Length: 161
Image (cartoon, rainbow, N blue to C red):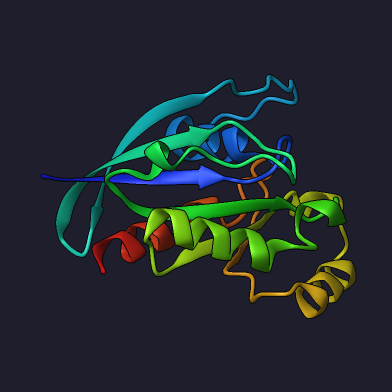
């Protein structure tokens, strides 16, 4: 069995914990409980005929002036930057944030995921896609379980590269 460490990072309140909970436990809660430090979850899945243990690090949300400790990235195979589609301040400077993460992590690719799709119309989501500084890899809704599995499968594929 292959074990891969992946990180979910992004501003506070964007739904990182909700995405992980949906993926690992198939649960969703409206209650907001802020993550302090790091919470690690595991899930075993089969990818490309290989059994894989995913160690998912849920990194506490940050604000724009806070930096994620470099130590969190040690041994990481992939990372997902999550933003809230309904809060422009969580994605307006995403290009700089992802470059900063690449610099401290050494990772070539960091998946960009817009969460909370259930709060917006398709037209508004397309506007965000057009104005976001970087291409968005996945649009998800932890609440509706929309594209969550696909986003995590994509991060697994990235971790294999």
